[in-house]
Amino acid sequence: MSNQKQHYHHGDLYKSLLDAATKLLREGGVEALSMRKLADRVGVSRMAPYHHFKDKNDLLCAIAEQGFRLQEGCLSECEVLPTAAALKTYVLTYIRFSQEHAETYDLMFGRDIWKTGVPTESLKQVSKVTFKRWLDWIERLQRERVLSADDSA
Image (cartoon, rainbow, N blue to C red; front, side, top):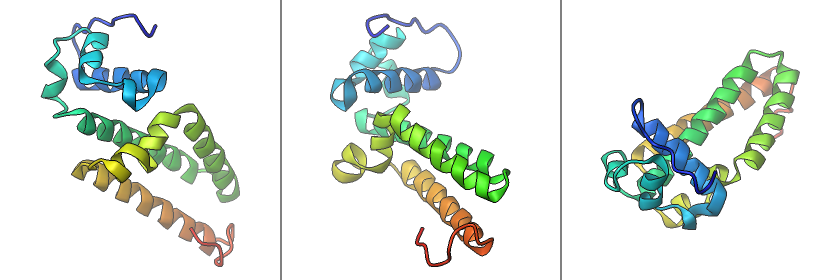
């Protein structure tokens, strides 16, 4: 499928671009992702991605944001489980996410955006909200004695 072109007809172009960019990232890494290749993959004009992302860094930040939202969704699903089961489920889900979405995970926690790039304000915000939510949950697990209060988050 890496050489197949999707033809965009209607719907949510932003989501189509993000999905295709994530696939390109998975196939060849950050270096292989370009706005031109993205446009070709989705089947839109070479300028169409620029209506949603000002540049490649902006696109990478949007992919990282999507990853944080996925992680927050996993946390939401786990929080309703009994606490000991929730922690185990979340840890396993987190590890699986980091393995199955290694490129997105790398964007979320290092590499091009945080170390050498410029994170967008929306990425900074979603990452802070997700981290705060994680810390609040860890504190709750400590209060419920699922985790020791001596354990750091």
